[in-house]
Structures are given as C-alpha cells and as structure tokens.
Image (cartoon, rainbow, N blue to C red):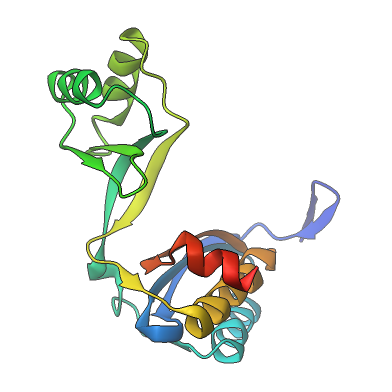
Length: 179
C-alpha cells in the first residue's frame, strides 16, 4: 500500500457501480471509487437498508438511465433563442421544465461542441456536465421523500461514493414541508 494525499491508499483503486431501489420504488445508481469492494458494498447496502430501499443486482436499474450531456439554464432564459442555437449546434433535445428552467441535452460526444457554440452565442448554463439522466421519474410524497433525502445524504457522506443518480421527483412544496 502507498500513501496518497495523506491517506493510506492502495494501488488497486477501482471504479464500481451499485444499483438498487430506494423508498417509493425510486431507481438509484451509485458510482464509487474503492480499494476495498467488501467495505464499500457493505456501506452502500447499509444506507439502502436503513432508508427503506434495497441493493439490486448489476443492471437492475441501469436500463432506466442514459448517459447524456446536460446544460441547465435558469428560468428567464430566452427559450426561443436558446432552442434555435442549441439545435443549430447539434443538441439532441431541449426540455422546458415545470419551473421554466431549460435543459439542453446532447450526446456525450457532442457535449463540448454544443457547450462552446452556446457560449459563443452568449448562452452560458448555470450548470453543465455529462450525467446519467433517467428515462422516467418517480414522484415522492412526504414520508418517502424524507427517507429518499436521508438515503441520498447517507450515500453522499460515504468516502468511496463519487456520484449518485436517481429518478426521484420531489416537488418543491414537499421538500419545504420536510426541511
């Protein structure tokens, strides 16, 4: 073993992905970097179990997600101008959300070109990146939403966890009521 960044590390750090279902049937994918799969799977399983979910097998929820480039614009952006520029730049889709924010979706390969073209048109997203986007969303009410938020917090607190994706749809009003 070697020391990496002040922490005891190992030369055999690997990427692993765990899949499962959270409260209310929400699909959850957890991407990790670990030097000890046994520790990591135990930690991830514990979080799922404690919050009313269960860890699934490889592929149990991955089919519900697709890898996309996503550029997120705040409400108030000129939708027509953004849509025209995005399509001209090679974006696959432009989605106007309920809160009037707008997401531009691209293939992972076209992401950089589309982002650059939009920046050239002075359309700069609030956030952007390559992500796993769910094909469907699961709406959660108060109790399941609270348990889902706890699950996400527990997973985020694990050192090995790099990224968590889910198809949970929690309304702002529900979030406010459980905060």
